[in-house]
Amino acid sequence: MKLTQRKFKLTQTKFFESPRYAATAPTKPPPTPMLTHLHISNYVLIDALDIDFADGFSALTGETGAGKSIIMGALGLLLGQRAEARAIKDGAPKCCVEAIFRPDGNRLRETIEAAGADYDPESCILRREVSAAGKSRAFINDTPVTLAALRATAARLVDIHSQHQNLLLQQEDFLLDTLDALGSHEAQREAYERAYAGWSAARATLSRLGEESRQSADEADYHRFRLGELEAAALTDGEQETLEAEARLLAHTEDIKAALHEASHLLAGEEHNMLADLRRAAATLDSVGRELPLAGELAERIESARIELADIAAEAENALENTDFDPARSAFVHARLDTIYTLEKKHRADSVAALIELARSLRQKLDEAENRDELLARAEKNLARAEADLAKAAEALAKRRREAARGLEAALAERLRPLGMPSVRLEVAFTPRQHPEASGPESAALLFSANAGVALQDAAHTASGGEVARLMLALKALLSDRHGLPTVIFDEIDTGVSGTMAGRMGQLMHDMGRSRQVVCITHLPQIAAQAAAQYRVYKVEHDGRTTSHIALLSPEERIDELATMLSGGELTEAARQNARSLLESGHNGAAGSQKGTPATRKTKKAQ
Image (cartoon, rainbow, N blue to C red; front, side, top):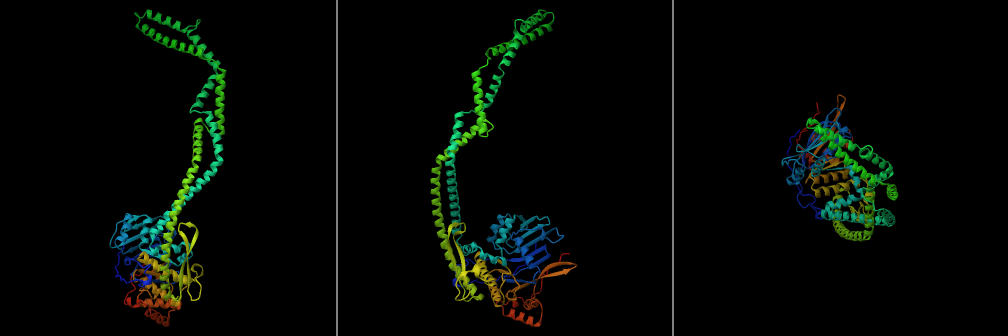
């Protein structure tokens, strides 16, 4: 199903204008693509959900369990996450998630065309379908594509940061990857990775040759002894079959001679000479051949048979004269066969050909052993060269990472001071690794102190939940700007934050929304009040079924929603007044921007 794309006017403003951000500031204006429409059908508690998104900063709110996480799960399908048949609504043949994005020209064209889909300058439609049987299909602009192609395209359009990703701060390589992303030194990172791969391969080769050299030294004598036995035997292919045939002949010499003598005697013996009888028979028939032509023909046939039998008799007589038992030859044949059988049993071979192949293999191993020193010397030189290349690449990468670290420290501090950390101090500490690793020659830790007079400590282990949330928000702001991601979605990144700090986090998201689309799923009214648009996710029970829905809130509906969030569920006039004050004090004028906006496009439940 192709959805109609709604168009929104985009407002472009400069993001992070401070000179201190220069080290990590984007080198070109931020991109303009954005998520304009989302359709979800038959997914968990959702029958059919359609939502239009505007640019800038939007907030999604709703009670716990209303379905916000379900929407995020559906979006995850577009990002290539694992599809499970159990996510399909009961009784439905399949679920479908479709999103429409506004493209940005050549930035997406190469990715989409590489996937085999057509590029549309007006819209980019991503769709994922999952059948009840668990089969998944992906589409870009209604063209079937691989899941990898869908994932690659979605990665250029949207980034989702969930509260679970706050744990990334505890992963050793996360900070290194962040520095590489902000520092734009992909060339140095790739050069290091190539040098590391070459060094690893050279080290593995030297280790293998060294182990083989140690083993070959122990095995060389044994191989040499086995080869000596085989070479002394001077075996030839087919020899065994020939000797076995000769052995059978020698074993039956007397029987053979008796048979040859009997045959020769019967054919041409003095007492019973079959050949003489045949000659007389032919002559007798020939004598009446003029009177009976058939007799002449029979005489010719008998004569032909006689000639053939005479030849047979001569060969039998010749064989008889040449057949005699030779004890010496018999002894040689049996001795040779004993040698062959012994070698086959000893070396577990089933033929002379296998023994010959074994000799070739042993000869090759001995040759390799003799050349092992040369191979080892060559491998040592290769490793030394690879180590020099790795050291050079490591130095270049470490230099660029340290430069990026200084920019990151300044930019993060600037982002964090308005978030309730006026005395924040940050430092990226590098520690040389004992051995090079694929991610780099050094490990990195973010040292952090939120308060004056408190020593710097590793943020991954000492920062509170609220501090980590603010750190990750500031980092995500920097990364999204550097990567040029047009749409950033925060899924309850505000865990552990409340009150004034929540409002300031909301202000930062609003500032991010000036240059890109930002969507935040939040339980905090202070953050929701900063949004230019607010959506409420809610559940409806009807006929014993529960379904999730979403609605864009009008100004009055928004006040009621914020009042409910402020009061913890009880909607009072005092709570409404607090909600109005919260909206009026917002830095983004969100209430004014939505004046007169109806609660449009409420989702409808499938019939």
